[in-house]
Length: 210
Image 1 (cartoon, rainbow, N blue to C red):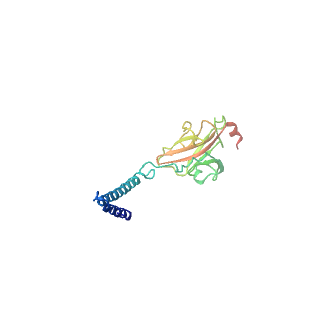
Image 2 (image 1 turned 135 degrees about the vertical axis):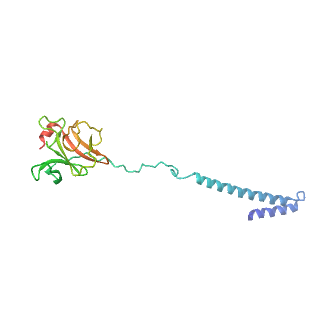
Image 3 (image 1 turned 180 degrees about the vertical axis):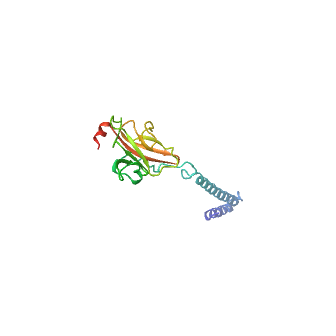
């Protein structure tokens, strides 16, 4: 019992001495004080258990959630389709078949730098010009071990994939794409890929470009 309960028990004992009709008044007071103490301890124990259980049940959101929150994961954006036709001396490894030691030709380089597309007509057009074909010479610095190279094209780099009009991108070929615009060609083979952006103009625009 605490000090207050001791004082109450003593007071009831003094009252019991003055009340002969209830000789066990002091004992009754002690028993009631004990019951209050037990009730108090029990209540504290129950409250403590409740706090512990509550602490076990209330956990940070997602602690037991196997799914990962990807809301803050940065997603790399698709780079814009851009192409630049360079008209200068071809790389040394791309000069095979030319009679001049340092041939100057318009060409576009792939993203990896491993492939160049040499444009014999200076510009590609859609539809093809009647007097100038969309002839391209594909030259690889290093060919992949798997020579089964495939090509697909997407307008602006994000449109539906197109394969019609695309030959195997190795050696000389004709590249006829369905509409003007910037076309991103994906060159794929077993175990790797590369991309190259080609600008396709209207026949009138291509005729005006040098």
